[in-house]
Length: 260
Image (tube, rainbow, N blue to C red; front, side):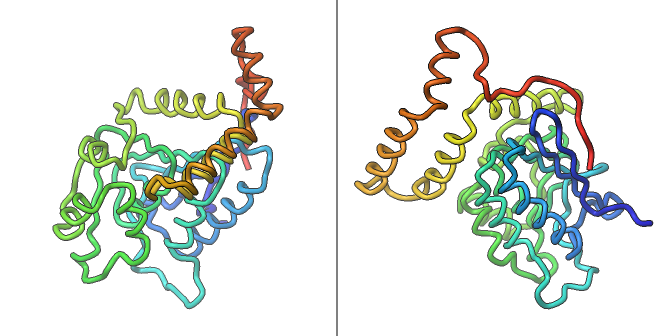
């Protein structure tokens, strides 16, 4: 029996880890892997037991993009559909990058809320070097890295290190191999301290208004969200936990994990 192309692990702290599991090809994505990832994200989006999603790759690499040797049949799930799911999900999503992050792998990272990269990781947009265009997924990369950086690295196809990816805005935290997991845990802990319903609403609002000019509609919408959330049970608990110098009741205690 072949190994599953996507591994799923849900911890008792409500952290869902999705691991691309084709290490023999650098976690290059074929239709089977993308279909499994789409289903897992759809399930996580409506599962109240999931607070944070971590996306990572098995073995030496995060993701080397699309598997160009695979059979891409009509109707197969492709990178733009996965990017939209990652971009739309109301839960915080963290990408953990090691080794190579290439092409579609960069698009996956660009759609996550936070990206932690090992300092030895490298990135590339090599599509033009094999005579293809990146397609709709480049829109997500443009938003994350900015047009100037994308124009350079897409047109040249050259590799760039994690430190440069951080300067461009694609990566938020760069860590040594020995410190990588500690940095991921610290980041996830910060997400868990945030009120889950408020986080979901704010993430949706930022997605809607984050790339627009600041106008009356955006101001009114954010003010309405502020008023709504200020009167919520979460806000009441948040204020109480602050006064009492304790963790809020939505913060899950540390314990073991269960694997699917």
